[in-house]
Amino acid sequence: MAITKSDLRKKLRAKRHEHVEQLPESMRGLVFRHPPAPLLEKISPNASIGLYHAGPHEAPTASYIGYFYEKGHTIALPRFASGDAEMEFAEHTDPFGADDLEPGAYKMMQPNSDAALLVPDVLIIPLVGFTAEGHRLGQGGGHYDRYLAEHPGRIAIGLAWDVQICDALPTEPHDQRLDAVITPTRMYGPF
Image (cartoon, rainbow, N blue to C red; front, top):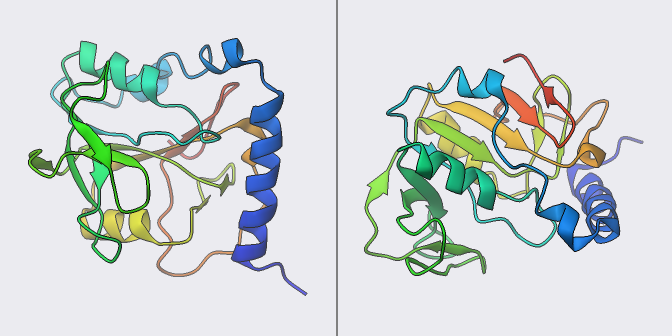
């Protein structure tokens, strides 16, 4: 009997939670300090960068947000107008604080409702599981798959802990493949 995506999400979330809880708090701030050189070589100097405001056990994005902002890139984060709205990206203008963020429909911090909408050139994407070939298992809402399908040509990079890698994942025709996945120890994928 094949494992369902839902069962796999539960298993991988538990594995991720256990891994992060075992890391000393000081260590969590040291990983994902800046993007690897092979990724930076693919990003134009004027590219806008879409990231996410990381939850407690997701791969942290704060250092990447600060890094790209200091290099002059426009930063955007996902925003949901309501629980049944499509995901959009809006400008994040306070990357070293959170004065321009508010809790959103999914209890994630997101740009305020008056923040400018953007379509980022590069997306740094959260995930629950991934393969070395760039397949991704997300939270289950399909938001990033739909966004990438509606906005082709974006560079899509997953950010994950090493424990989230899978030999294979169940895939469906609508699932969007990532260009690469970055973990604390290496970069995976066809990039």
